[in-house]
Length: 84
Image (cartoon, rainbow, N blue to C red):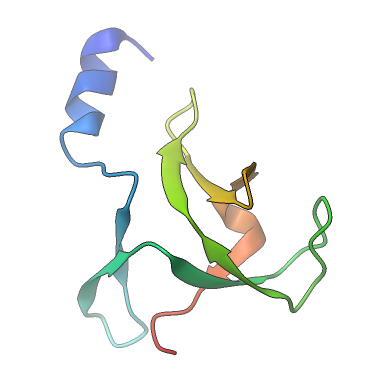
C-alpha cells in the first residue's frame, strides 16, 4: 500500500476504538478494552476464551490487528461482543 493510501486510512482509525455493525444492522462504536471471544485456537488462547482487546492496530496490509496482553492477533480469530 502506498503512503497516501495509508494516510487516507488513518483518518478513520483509532487504536482505542472500532466501529462495528451489529446483527440488527446498527452502527456502533466500541471503546477499548473490547471483549472478544476466541473462535480459533491461536497462540496461548483457546477456543471459547473471553479476552480483552487493549488496542486495535492496522497491519501493513491494512487489516485490523487486536493487541491482547501485548500480543498481536489478526481480527478474524475472534468474535466481537457488542454487549456484556
